[in-house]
Length: 218
View (cartoon, helix red, strand yellow):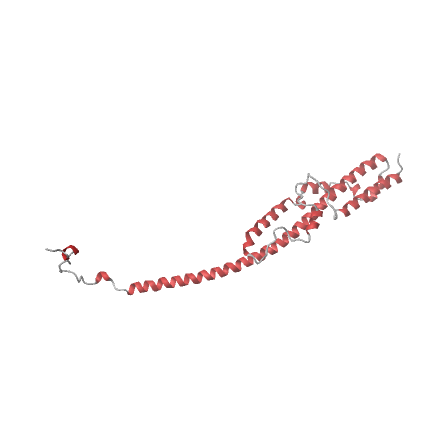
């Protein structure tokens, strides 16, 4: 039988590995094919920190509005599958036994079989927590990016609003000018004489001869 001192040392090592894994999550996120909601690894995010989000547009460019809107909608949709909303993983973490979280409980382990079972559980907890914390870090950066997008989108909409207000004022002035022309034209038409009321100056006179009659040799 394995001594309690040896067992305790083995499990302390496992807990140290857990802490080390959690610390290393800020440097690297383990790749996985099972987590479909993970869009980018934490490493990829670190590489993008110096750059604006893809498709960055000038807030002073009103024409960028539709593209900004599309990217904003996509970013919001992506966050629907964010790590913080993964109830399944959160439940797994909440269900982790107290033994993997409280080093003082190692005193109760007195045999090798129990120590090996705990070691396996601790290793699984390391992977679960490291992967989930990496996803949370990715989500955090996504939300920072979304915040930048919202600031830019808001500024773009303010610029668009200002432009549309100017256009509205311009067309109001055009409408006023056209309305004035219509009013003046109506007044002018009313001031013109009605030719239908003039006397028939040709009434009772013989009709003018035709061209053939004028040049007839008879």
